[in-house]
Amino acid sequence: MIENNKPKIAISIGDLNGIGIEIAFKCHEEISKICQPIYCINNKMLKRAANELKIEIPEDFEIFKTKGEFDLKPGTVSKKSGKYSFNSFMDAINLANLKEVDAICTLPINKESWNKADIKYKGHTEVLRDYFGKHAIMMLGCSEMFVALFTEHIPLRKVAKKINEEDLTQFLIDFYNNVKSENIGVLGLNPHASDNGVLGDEEVQIFKAIKKANKHFEKNIFKGPLVPDTAFSPLSRKNFKYFVAMYHDQGLAPLKALYFEESINVSLNLPIIRTSVDHGTAFNIAYKNENINTQSYINAIKEAINLISMKK
Ligand SMILES: NC(=O)C1=CN([C@@H]2O[C@H](COP(=O)(O)OP(=O)(O)OC[C@H]3O[C@@H](n4cnc5c(N)ncnc54)[C@H](O)[C@@H]3O)[C@@H](O)[C@H]2O)C=CC1
Ligand SMILES: NCC(=O)COP(=O)(O)O
Image 1 (cartoon, rainbow, N blue to C red):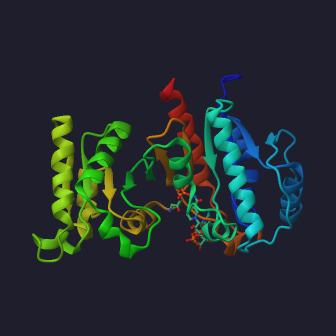
Image 2: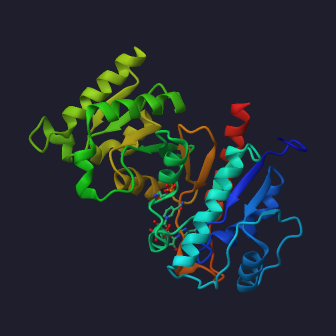
Image 3: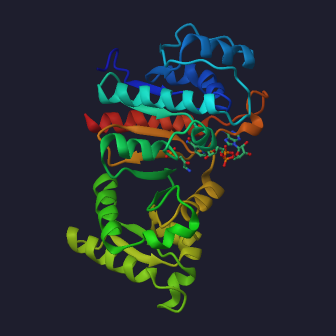
């Protein structure tokens, strides 16, 4: 699989009305020094995007021809763009599943565009979970801190109902098996972690899951339920590098406030390696020659390479 010592990485091109393709062009030379990228996009769409961006397509830009074509409408939610980004992602997954590539790295999709295209999934992680029939875990972060999300793309009003001892115990066991950190902070759900039942009772389930998961490993790995409003204080972050948040914004708001530029997204607990940028399609700055940050993408590629080397 590895030729010239460079791992092959399939890049799903993301929503072509967003910033992903510009990031791919701008970083191609840099990432090609450390891997062999294979972009899931066909010639026609590649040329349209390059023309719109007034960028030359690099000569060594290797593609896997994801089928389909449509008119680009920069910064716009679109059914056709949603469908194309989904197809590009499916091509990347299939390449990884067939072991044609060593890993996949995903550029951002737009969830509204997927929805318009009648795609039943909210995001990449849900697709991967279904495709491989595994409890994929969404973890975002950088070298300073990582946050795994117990619930992800569901309305806030449904979060509390999802918290139960059995599912959370399994999540914690899977999470430890993937990250192997001996010290993981698990957040409560309610203000002040409920103050012993005064402000809610989900912490009872969280406490039981922590106890059970620690018993499973016969080690005191999981600590909590941590009081959510201080879990990410400077002092607490000195104690923990890995956190489990009960819902999307509980974990990602602090992470992105602190480390938006450098953080990445990693799908854990799967038979393939998948990393991603931490940001979205940024329609407000797409195709506008704005100052687009590429650090998350570069770090996502580097982490994919790191995970490939650890798997060998
Ligand atoms: N990996 C993925 O596929 C992700 C997809 N999304 C989706 O993207 C769409 C837009 O999401 P938003 O919540 O608006 O978040 P967003 O990350 O696209 O944008 C939030 C703000 O950050 C800025 N920004 C984002 N990335 C940037 C970059 N690389 N350089 C400079 N500025 C950047 C944007 O211009 C905007 O002001 C939604 O459909 C969302 O669900 C969001 C996060 C991750
Ligand atoms: N906030 C993370 C996000 O929306 C990306 O999720 P996924 O597409 O990696 O499942």
